[in-house]
Each structure stands twice: as C-alpha cells, then as structure tokens.
Length: 181
Image (tube, rainbow, N blue to C red; front, side, top):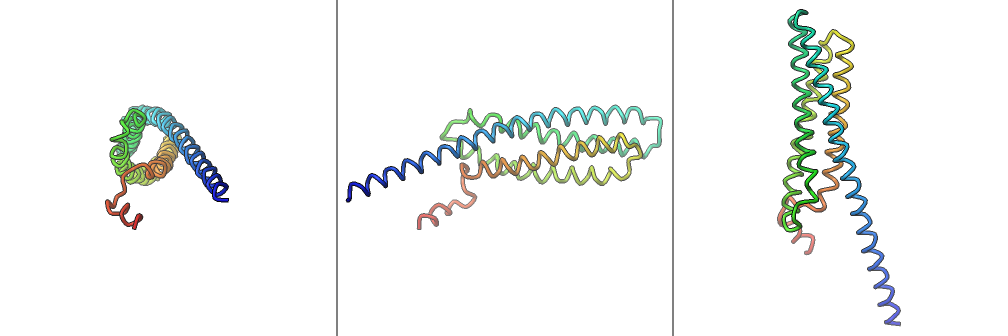
C-alpha cells in the first residue's frame, strides 16, 4: 500500500512538473510574439511620424496654429515611438541574460515597463487633446492610427509585465519569508 502511494505521488509530481514547464514554454512563445509585435508597431509608428512630419511641411504656408498643432502631435508620436523601440530593444535580449542575473534584469524591466505604460498613456491623452484642434481629416486619421498603435503597445506592456513578474525579484524582500512562514 505504501508503495502504491509513493508511486501515485511520483506520478503526481511528474505531472505537475510537466504542466509547469509547458506553461513556461507557452509564456516564452507569447513573450517572443509580443516582442516581435512591438517591433512592427515601432515601424508603423515611424511611418505615421514621417507622414505627420510631411503634412507639417505642407502646412507651413497655412494657419500658424495648425502648423503648431501638427508639430506637437508628431513630437508626441515620436516620443511614444522611442518608448516602444526602447522596450523592444531591452526585451529582445532577455534570452541572452545569464540565469544568475535574470531576476535582477527582469525586475528592472518591470519597473521600466511601469514607466513606459504611464508615459505612453500620457502621449495618447496628449494626442487626443490635439486631435480636436486639427482641421484636416487626413491628419486626424493619422493621429487616430498613432493612438491605436500606442494603446496596443500599452496593452502589450501590461501583458509582458504579467509574464515577467513570476521570474522577477519581489518588490518586498520579506515576501518570500512571509510565504514560507
């Protein structure tokens, strides 16, 4: 009877280990997919920025306020694009970080992703504010496209946060001790 219990416990432990490793493979696959999507969004935001910049050049002889509004919107798009590129660049190297330093690196990435979410939301709000003052429908369409891409980035940043948190250091150094107690 004791041998049967030991056998069942062994089977149970092996099943738990198999499901745990399968979850991490799924997480790794999802993380790779998000990192690739961040790069694609970076490229699309670059195109929107260039189109807004070109429209600003076309509006040089137009009303002065319109030119100012267009310039401010393309600067917000550029800032959000830099945030996206920075996050992509730092997340793309996760697989190359030594295991001994990985939790520290992920902890820094989590803090940085929190900041990126905050700053990206600020850029979206700024774009929405200036959207109302832009006269051209084509320009408004570009601003809406940029806002959609930035909001997609925010969603991906939040998803990456959830994927990285289990492997990162806890924000409270005594949390592990409390869990064990």
